[in-house]
Length: 79
Image (tube, rainbow, N blue to C red):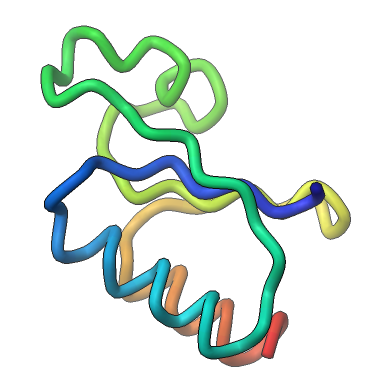
């Protein structure tokens, strides 16, 4: 799968991105992350920071964070 979303359960920003991907019909894989920032080593490795959501679009070579930016990307590039 070329689109991966790093998300935290109960995070409203992560849920908004997930909803947008679903509405756009994008197939994606969700990687659930730990609630503790200090335990988010995988997120840090792929994005350079520990916050979520993080979207990775391997097909287009895009890695991005910040839900507003991701939502715009989904609308413009993936929908």
